[in-house]
Length: 133
Image (cartoon, rainbow, N blue to C red; front, side):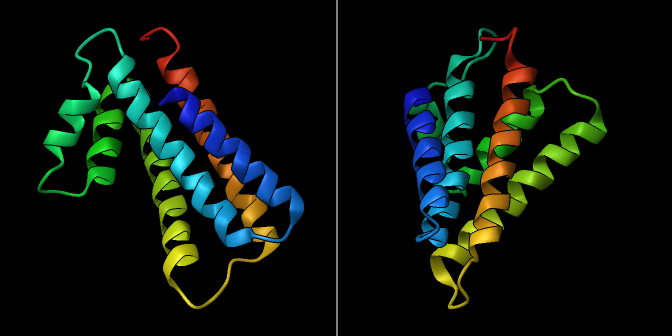
């Protein structure tokens, strides 16, 4: 899943750089962050949640909120940073929903901004979980 997240983020970068598919780049930016969170939950040394357990735990609920809450509970970051992280993920998810389902298109500038947000969120995850995997 780590590689999948890296490839999805690289695809977002490619789409941003071509400036032709901003909606698709936002989709990839969000899913790269989501996939990286799924990977981390499986990879942590203490109380990991396997991919199978994640799938089973989310059978009757929103898997994206479950994963975000599970990551947030393991961050061990100051509350302000944890809230800021969750807000960033939620903003990116909202942009992904707009990109995937709304009539209004994402602009090239917005897609670049969301790609940068995804980069920052993944960098924060790597910082918070550096010693946990």
